[in-house]
Amino acid sequence: MRDSFEIRAQDVAGRIGELRVPRAGVTVETPTLLPVVNPNLVTIDAARFSEFGVEMLITNSYIIKRDDDLREAALERGLHDLLDFHGAIMTDSGSFQLAEYGEIETTTEEILAFQSDIGSDVGTPVDIPTPPDVEREQAEAELETTKERLHVAEGIDTGDMLVTAPIQGSTYPDLREAAARHAYATDLDVFPVGAVVPLMNEYRYADMVEVLAAAKRGLGADAPVHLFGAGHPMMFALAVAMGADLFDSAAYAIYARDDRYMTVSGTEHLDDLEYFPCACPVCTSHDPDDVRAMDDERREGVLAEHNLWVSMAEIRRVKAAIHEGSLLELVERRARGHPRMLDGYRALLSHRDQLEASDPVSKDVFFYVSAESADRPEVARHHDRLSRFEVADDVLLTEKGGSDDFDESWRVVPPFGPFPRALSQTYPLTAELPDRMDRAGYEAAAEGVSRLVAANPDSEFTLAHDGWPESALALVPARVALVDLGSEDSNGTAPEDEQ
Ligand SMILES: [Zn+2]
Image (cartoon, rainbow, N blue to C red):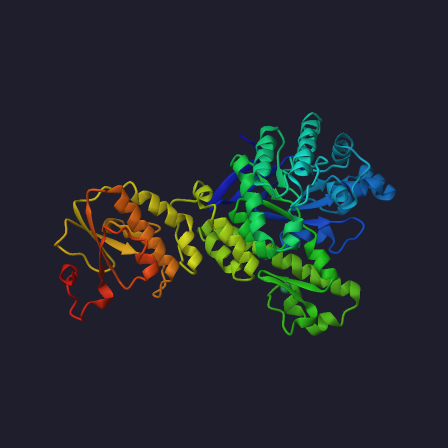
């Protein structure tokens, strides 16, 4: 059991957690976003971060170490004083520079000692960030190097500084999983999933989900997971639902530099905005014309502030959704912002067996709001349950009222399929459903019927459905008698009279 992380609430694979950071003397509530602070290029003073709800930031120890003035100041005054920030500080090691420029002038021993010396609360070894889509040989070889460095990091006495164990493996799920299993077996504390920035930059959210799903399979539930370099608010809900706890990003500042305005459904360019669709202090005290008229530095500053406000607000919204049990509903809404986000959501649902293990069995809400809702873990769980039910000899499965002509009469509700009437008031059968169900919902219900039928080979079944589409009826086993309630006369003929 890792004693620095505790889970308080859970929805899908997302969790509200408490990360204890002993050196800073603080406990950080996750999920959270760590704004990246480049000490050479400050966009928002870290002293102001608490206004935005920031509890933890990340800065780069390699940049500090290479700059004589910064190095001396950090060694003398400590990082918290240098940045004027008194929450938790994580430091990166130069791995990013290694990925960008091919080489760096430091080692894991040296940079971890330096991070400890300047007062970092969470340090990072020099891992090898292998980009997506490389040859497998390269991914394997670089992963071996990363693993060796984790062992080096384990052997260094860094006092009460937490140390991260980055997980690499490129876009090979088996390598990511093995890397995660190896990292989890070390005594290191926080688990960044590395080198995903190229995936984000290309909107490859489905691939991001695959990488995260693989890493999660190799980690224990008590491992705090950091999605390294991910900081666009549009993907927080998706990544949290897959089990990410920490995010960090310079995006709030980098986007501002290019006049880019972040929203939870994408990025707008300042030039294209007539109005600010946001209630943050920047957007309520300026209109887009005001901001366009500002000089470069001021414009960059206020846009960075807006970008950070909108990001932190989304983190709070995600946390609220976890408490409420509505995280998948939030992911569905965000998935409508961009087709690639929809791909990401569909990739998430393809891992529903994996998600089901952590998804609460009962929640307050289930809103069926898209065809994807038919693939939610709750539907799969109900179908699994149907395989374990025993029924009487002659069973009516009906979308309307029961009939005394059968030994037993079960309700049928798409997307769940059949269930005994006594379970009507239990989750997820209490779901709010649209009156106009989609094809996916009917097909899922038909899958439910076939699971129940398969589990009861000696029983006879009649399905009284209300105009199901052919694609759904084709999934119902041939031995089930079908009655279309929609073709009854208005007096409500009993199902058996239709045959
Ligand atoms: Zn705003």
